Length: 584
Ligand SMILES: Nc1ncnc2c1ncn2[C@@H]1O[C@H](COP(=O)(O)OP(=O)(O)OP(=O)(O)O)[C@@H](O)[C@H]1O
Ligand SMILES: [Mg+2]
Image (tube, rainbow, N blue to C red; front, side):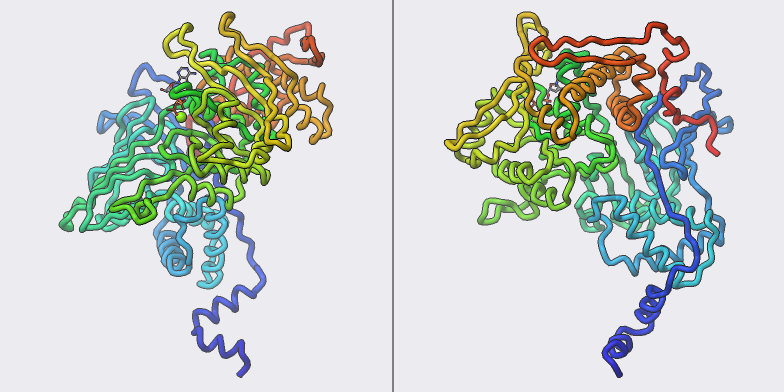
């Protein structure tokens, strides 16, 4: 008996079968499973007569939709989750597949942070199971079954669609056989068509919520108070005795809205020139620190400029408390936790996860951007090493000025080698503008790091400065970072300035259109990335000339005849219409 046969005989029949079919060539065609989360929210229509309410919008295209409609029998609005339906035969196939999958899947899917990776892994395994069990499926059946595999293994089962609905603020379930209720941003409290019919299933679901939050719930510890990976808060109980109600849960979705760049313009925190400049820097993966005193709006400003990150970029964020809010699809938010019990000899508590731990882990995931909510201590070292090794990093730091930050970073207790600072591109300094009203904040100045000399002296240049008397922003020195980016891209510096001017126009245009909600602004920015020409056309920019050097005068030429058909730049015009009256 050769060695392979020996192993085969040891591993048993199941293993043999698996090896056999994995060596088989794919014979049948199975369509690829793709699911698209909506990242654009469109205004929902207002119905003067509540009974006329009937609105449908997609959540996970092309599989799940929401329909909100007046129910004549119950005389209330009902929130209906619309998903593909499985017939009895398909249901039993799904049961079979999911049972086998549970046995096959060796990794904990909770730990796979990248959803698309988890999905790919599952899809490969589903395909194996289908072949192995000799199941015959049509393309439509396959896609439906994959949807449920996605929903139940990667998503949040029955409430997955609700959790992904950006309009929902609150989800509550009072037990088995009782409909789940939601609080909708537009329509208020609504009864849904989602019901947990099985007490055991409900209990298992609550255990899953606990697992996803890194917590534990059991009959011995039946109360759960936790935060889901997306920042939503969960409060749940598992009935102590095996009561027919099974358990209850409430999820308060993390919905505090951050200021969009447009709102920052309206608040006069910053002007369009600076935003266009920061946009270009961030797009080209510059590393930036936002600094300032307590409550000067550092975190808010950081959050606003993160909306300029390209939609497809992979972002990992790390925070102590949940503040950052982004709509990027490949955003992995991380949260440090304090641990519990008596501190260990090292001073840390059991189960604690520090920013330092998270940051080391973050760089291992090789993201395009790492965002650290606030840098304070030992994590600075990892952050700057990350920056030096080519990862774009964005963070805030408590300090009054750029020179203050630099001093604090290179002296104890942080003590970074000054040369590490050379990889930082820019420092944004935030300040209060008390004389301009109680809550006014301003970008006081933006400094670029030019170089660090052999004695550790750091040379910076001021690119923009706020003039408190005029309450205006002034350009000071010419940016060296823009020139560097231009060089790397093989573009002329003039062309970079032209692009900045177009982006500036685009931001003004968004402001004039009243597009200010962060979700909407991000989707317009994404659209700009995809097809900037479309916007130049709508904004009627024909050509832009920019003179560099001391004058920095911009000459804009617009088309002389205004084409009226093009001045209705609605979402519809941009092909972004998402809300559908009827789900098909
Ligand atoms: N540009 C702004 N205009 C008006 N209010 C703002 C502005 N930016 C932030 N705020 C408000 O100021 C408060 C503090 O903002 P934020 O948390 O961003 O500041 P911070 O500098 O990060 O604070 P901390 O020092 O606590 O980290 C928040 O309530 C926020 O809503
Ligand atoms: Mg902050």
